[in-house]
Length: 121
Figure 1 (cartoon, rainbow, N blue to C red):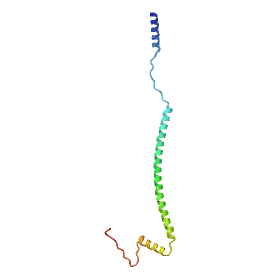
Figure 2 (cartoon, one colour; figure 1 turned 135 degrees about the horizontal axis):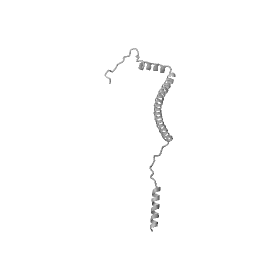
Figure 3 (cartoon, rainbow, N blue to C red; figure 1 turned 30 degrees about the vertical axis):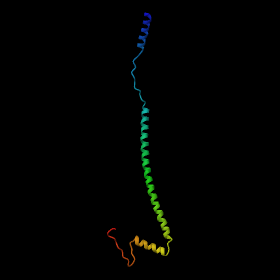
Figure 4 (tube, rainbow, N blue to C red; figure 1 turned 45 degrees about the vertical axis):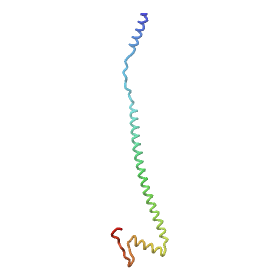
């Protein structure tokens, strides 16, 4: 049995001699991959900035459009009034002119008195 044991011991020693200590090495990252990551990050930052900037611009343009639509409504109402005034004749025309003179130009008729309430009531 000694022969068997000695054979086993020899095989075990040979295996120990065959085993080498391996030190872990750091994986070298390829420079192309690093540049790719940087390019992707730059694109994401650019895209985010562009989207935010465009959304702000869109909201500004919507507010401007709303303002212009309100002005358009006012002009349409004035236009309708002027078309109606254009058809005035006779008594209606003289009443309209008198109304404009009194309200807008602060004119009065001969013999009229104007009373001003200074109390503010």
